[in-house]
Amino acid sequence: MRRHKPTQAAFAVCHAAYLNPVCRFLPENLSILGYARSKLSKKDLQEKVKPNLKGDDDKVNEFLDKLDYEAGPYDKPEGYQKVCSAHSSA
Image 1 (cartoon, rainbow, N blue to C red):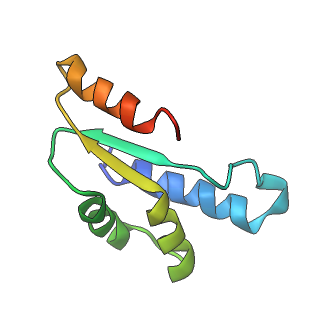
Image 2 (image 1 turned 180 degrees about the vertical axis):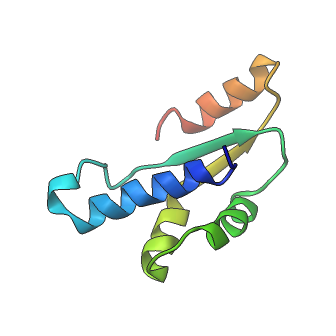
């Protein structure tokens, strides 16, 4: 699977939910969290993802605002604890 396919799929679901009132099942305060070892800022992630999203610029930017990112190891609990503490109130 290409690494950008999950992001494209999430954008498609968000876009469909916006266009069709029947599909408005996503909360307005939706947040999509990415987690990987690469040290990226939220802005870095947005710049990396944006070229792969096709659609209205306003909707693309609205989707990008919902993205968040945390870097950490997969083999140690510290990274996951950081995610939980940073996003538990979201």
